[in-house]
Length: 212
Image 1 (cartoon, rainbow, N blue to C red):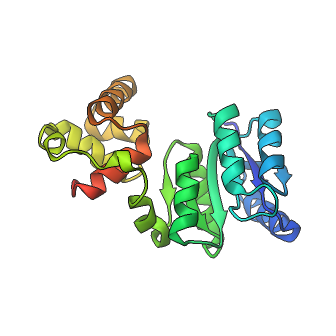
Image 2: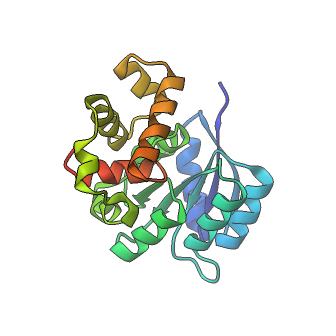
């Protein structure tokens, strides 16, 4: 089984090194590069194409917001997990709107950080409890008209619940007894039906409309 290839971006060298040591505890993860700001992170991501880029938000010069946007523009397959000390609404929303696939805090236990890396690599969106309220407030497009909620089928509601719970396509397929290809098609149709762009907005939609 191939390892999850991870890149770390943080302006504090001792924190970069410390995170490398933490991730090295898991045999399924390999740190392939480190960067000290958003610009260097974007350049390194384009060169190395990691599975996951771990990004701090506040860095001198080119910050995490810059790095996330550049990475998502140049290599959208790279998953970006924000790991920072800041949980204020403004910083969280900058990260999510830039395309971050997850947002966790440095105060988390080592095992939870490792689990978050694995989950994001597997296609899940991961947010710690401290920031979930801010995530719910992002993406205006995720505030649909009431008639759209009423038009959802029971299967579509179940799909939304699972997406909001952070399930990947394989898990959803197993839960709903569907093929993964069918799940992908159903998600695409649901995005089109609700006028949304991605899984994050679907999760926000589900929460705001009390589907979960």
